[in-house]
Length: 426
Image (cartoon, rainbow, N blue to C red; front, side, top):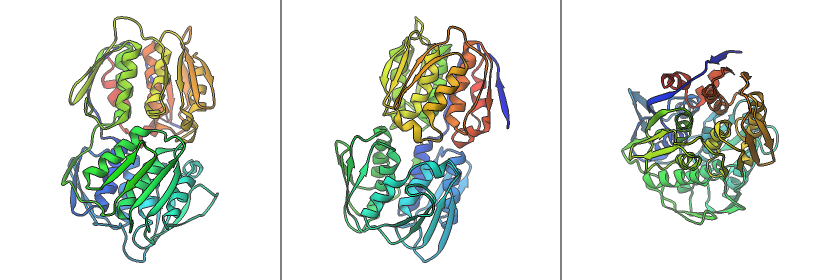
């Protein structure tokens, strides 16, 4: 398997324009496909996850044309498929494509098989399927109960009431809500228990509104969606990816002289922008502008923090590695949903942090990280997880080299990540 050796880095400086957000890109593609009228998408992320969504739309007969940095989607003004055809869709490990398409393909007509990689077959989807069935969907499991692959029939969604657990993944509720405006009657969704990753739901609700849907909620427990479908906003700019920004911002906080990241700012809709508040609480110097954020090291060394990061689980991974550079023990709490991501991220992060010398306490839903007395050069396994690869690119800032196993896994969200990161390393 390919390996990439990263040499010690003594300072980080420069400006960076972020690629488009993965979460926003795949939502925008689906909304544009369901909407009435053509939508021009700018700064769409070009990555493995978006390619799976684009390939699926092409297979389903939705015209998408690219001209430079602009993707034009011919909206179907309703369900993606309206005739009795059969399609088998392979969606890799792209949860942001698999789960929303599962819901969207219950609308209209046709039969569909949705499948993915072996890891995708290990990621639960039962809560979404149960909720869709409550609204009249016809979905069968083709393997283990509660997991892909799925057989979906386009029978339409009747509407009405559905309940869904909120403690596993926000993608389940997002997928349900994205298709709800095309149900035959109003939809009320009730969340059972606490909803995780609420900022990702905010992205969903904000974008549904931009495409003309009417959604109301009461404290993230009850969601009411009116029928009526979607209408194109015409032009749509995809924000820079705030999760991807976290690696560059963390690097600027560790070594500096400083990094300015363009594509996110004060008014960003993405919850992961809150990661800069964590950096500030650790002692980094943070300046937010309308279209960018600048990070420089503070006057004193970074200090450990004790934080609940259930709302930003992806950026929380960056903090786990950043903790190597902070004085004291950093505690990251309420991150149990790490275990059902691209890999069991709690176990993976614990294993790899210990390789470089850290003392790590791994719990059911928390991680405590104490910096090493002395950093150790190591070979970092990535488990096919793009975020593991990008997080551990920070370790060379400690003055030791590391080797990243399977560096190409970053193609899921940021294909040229290592080239962009190295461009800031002086």
